[in-house]
Length: 181
Image (cartoon, rainbow, N blue to C red):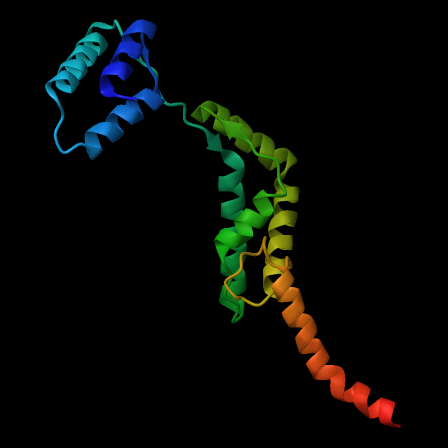
């Protein structure tokens, strides 16, 4: 969509949405030079925004309180483990594993986020600790091969064939010895 069409739409609707704003920004960033028409459209938009004829719709910010609670728990637990052992754990993998097994707690205001924090600490702290523990246990059971904890254990067809082939090569000589007896 062109700047002129975006401005026409904003003037018609009375609103400049975040998507429209982002598109205007993208066009301006990618253009080496704007045309006279584009400058005039932007000038019209700026005037309409200043007079209140067009209102910029603010982006709504969402906070997932569960993310911060899980990260806090995961960081504390990983720090304890890494301080007392040679293990190296990926906090991001552990948090993602736990978050995939916990309910999200979204808020749009700090007041809402505080409510969600209190609710989670009262009702969900034990579940959060359990899921972080499960993620850590899973991570410690698996070699650190660069595969995210959530993807480990899922083998592709080629991987399964390679594993079967390795097993056959390893144990084939036992089978041949027994069959000759």
